[in-house]
Image (cartoon, rainbow, N blue to C red; front, side, top):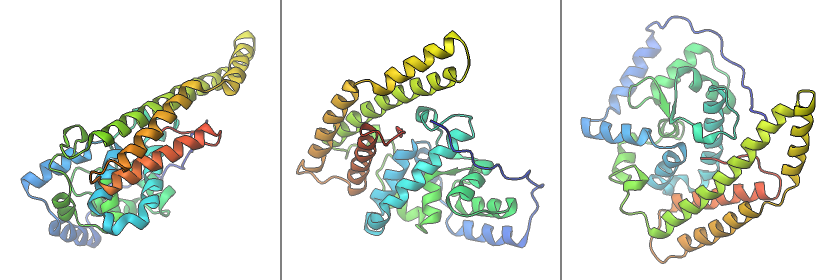
Length: 275
């Protein structure tokens, strides 16, 4: 498994105030949050990328139902760039952060949106940075990219953005999340072991030969534990969708999409676990 290697942007020139900065400042002032809103928003920004995505989808499902797959693709790329800039491959999703700094956001924009100069990317970051911390969480990117209002987002979101503290989450959804997490751990374990053996197999001598043999065995091995975890997850996701209790539609779509991705891996076509 090889990490995508986006080209690094050129060295940044010193920051200078421009007319564009002034325009951005006025735009930012219009969406400034009060102290309580900012505290909630900062907590939301510290959740995993997948949790951030679900918060936005649930809040604006009436507008985003037809764009959910687009949000998923942005999510996957955000994770990829986060890990790449840490020198890690996509299988190490347990090492993901919760936001991108200026350099990371520039790389992401170049790979997912369009090439930009350093100054252009800096201006985009200022537009997206609701919390004024010089970084862009996945929530901030989605609100900016999809032209959604930050204050309206907070009004529609749960009182506590931490899913562990969300009293409105049904037991069935919690069970589905736990079952999918087990699937993703199993996939990560397989892929991380595969990645280690691939590196060792590139050498010469007895160690490299042993690694090649172990790699061949791993790739042909029966994925019993993964298959068992997938069966459990599929049943849990189905139960979450048919519990008879109103479930946030964005969360329900998300767990089904995670299950779909995991099944791709089971068939030999998937390479990534996502959390």
